[in-house]
Length: 399
Image (cartoon, rainbow, N blue to C red; front, side, top):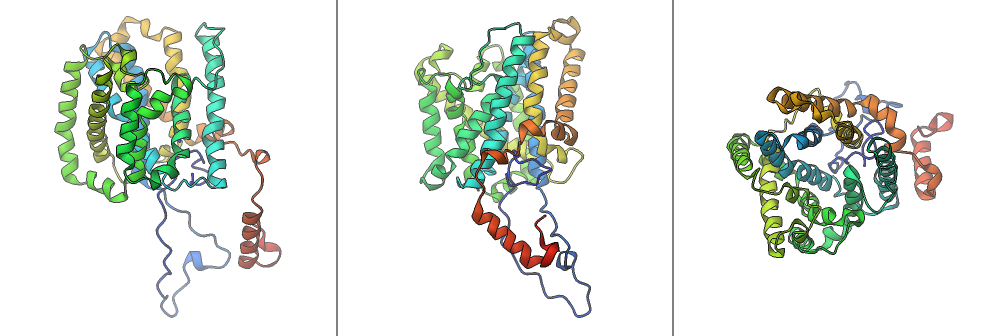
């Protein structure tokens, strides 16, 4: 999927590294002390970066819309073009952000605990929940529970778990991005990798995670300039035109990155070509997407902390809509129906990212599990000592 506050959720992507501490300037004589300097007052909470929260929310909305468009592609070339365009960059954008906020992962005990409780445990819970849902709603009572074969959306949790564990490696190699691209190319021409943990997706999407690891704040500032926003308009228009042309001619499974070239009935060499070509196209559209993301706080900024909730929970409705034949109605396949489906998908995913939903499902998405881990005696002693120094006596208990 942190170092965020409890309200944001531990599974949420961690914030950028804090700036080095600087002593405040001397206070003029007679001036009142700042709030943070007043004894007994807590330090102000660190502010989340509105740009990245906005980007995560908008990316997850596009994920939901893409799932809603999937059954419409056969009857609407426009829907197919939108589907291909969005699938070119929506998950790459989300993965780039995941990599960017994984830069601080160092495999320390606290990071490992957060990785387990925020990624591994939700993976197990939702894999089991999806399995029972498919048995009940999908008419497949024999569908097995397999933690090695992610079903539907849980592949991203398995991938994020693996990617984060490999973060220390990418920090020490000399050319991390070319190496990740080479691994993705080899995966695309290797049909014997198998389906365990959806390793094809893990390896083929790996370059985007590594790209996020090597990006710096100034790179995001570059694509947020006014010139980039203006240039993004014709680029997206061109992408839609190409997608409209390619929709009836191209196998959309290339964008899922879950199969090798041979499994898509294509020659092996085409896997290498498509991997590099799609990486380039995705990189351009991800940059255009970031160029359009607002950097100020808006009404949906707070929802950026709940994107993993929306991602996993909307899967029940996305699959349920197929199981319960919601797309069988003729009006759904008309222009007004397609617009309605799009708006419903955006509304549902928005509601699923809200704080009330986060509180309701926090037991599954970010369980405490203090019973499962050893206590860090050194950290506890350090924390107790700091608390006694700050607040001597009975009032010095840790919050």
